[in-house]
Image (cartoon, rainbow, N blue to C red; front, side):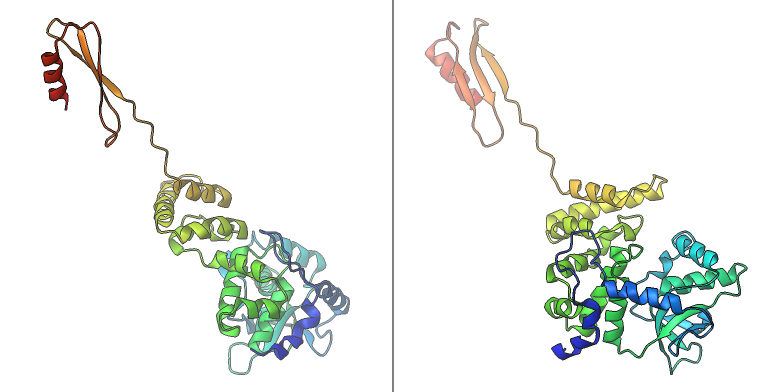
Length: 327
């Protein structure tokens, strides 16, 4: 993709930090907070501006590349929004959508704001039919929509590394020809941060199955597991441990946290140290019943040690015969 295409959202992302602490989301541009505050002040009716309005959430659908895992949206995970909407008696911060023209069942496609959309629908289904969905309608290409969604959501702590990583993985191939350098440049983030985030999406499914909730897989956990997953011996060890963890859960064991599971997987790759083999000394007695020889047999391949003991009363022929039997 040509560099000229970067201009669309450069004002939204030009000052994003490039050095991001592992395990943390990249910070969003402060202009997004200003945007939300401005829209919040304007939101005072069915139609707020010529581009911002309240609509029926049933006429909206999430964009195919949205970064939310719909299965992870529940009353519990959206409890903060439910409370905020009920307190304000409406949604104050609009979602970003674009208009659809080829779907008879929907008018809008949600670029950013799927969690708000889910919350409004939940409220309407739970004795609050008065709630509508506040949206800002924009004209965006798919690549522009991805960048807007990324800037809008990058600082949100309620989006997991798992959700963000899979959104980035899909966008990498579709918009940036599989080039991390090109994608990092367009998003104004460091290539190293992007690579660490993508590692979350690239863990083998056999290892992912070890986690009771895949959303527990963070950048930090993926950083520790991904190199080992590339080693055949270590990967097999982790896969075997993952099978054991799944069996434990299915057997009624208490689900472990993400860090606890990662620790188990890592530990499985470390072969237990073999205990040192103790040498077993054998004593051979002479015809007179006195100790004549001691024989030490250490680990295989290290040879046998024979010690001739004094005072046994054995002659040369007797000693040679005994040593021959040992050998």
